[in-house]
Image (cartoon, rainbow, N blue to C red; front, top):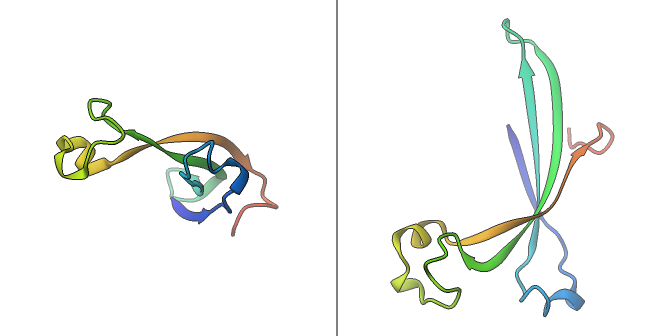
Length: 95
């Protein structure tokens, strides 16, 4: 897989609504190969994600100081929610 992350320009009008947590566009490419290793299919996808205030493990509140987080939240941090997902046509795929 090939990954390319690029930041979407934040919308100032929505900053209060989303508490300033920015959205990211993540593009990925997947390939299917036959038994001899020949590429038989390629697909590109774009997912827009937004980091939210909640931690991955909900046992810690969003405002919990970093130095007292449980081990899971200390390692993985805050949640991301999927805002949108779409397959990219070949004309839009980054080749």
